[in-house]
Length: 197
Image (cartoon, rainbow, N blue to C red; front, side, top):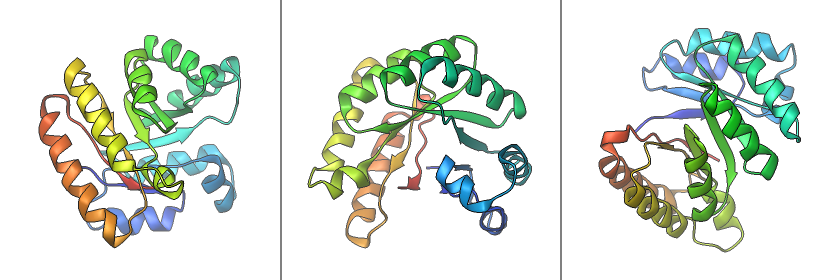
């Protein structure tokens, strides 16, 4: 299991890194905007703190060409960067092209097993099912995770999962058990998990 912080706050990242438990961070445009300052400097500073991990930096464009332009730029900033794109038609097209160029992609806003299957086939490095958002809409996020596990096991996709989930006490224990199961099922493909929302 790997632990990623969902933040762009450098003080939080530094404090977490001092425990020796931090495997990386994920950011989004909203989190970055809260911190102020140039986005590039913020991301590069995070990369220096998380030297042996990954820093996920998200595109802001909504069209494929914009995502390609931003994705290439982000990936060129530092070798630790994984580019985040949304699970949209434009995002999947960008994923396909950028993956072909050797750029690692985290596909975010995944809400179903079918979506997870499509982005894995297109070359996603990380897949981010939003379990907490599913639970918030009276859907069973754990069931979706189970379905994704079954599909990835059947097709032997060498991909990494992120559990985008709320960390409430009643669900965290169950989700950690699922994460352990998924880690074992995908030990050959180095599956990864996060406890972000």
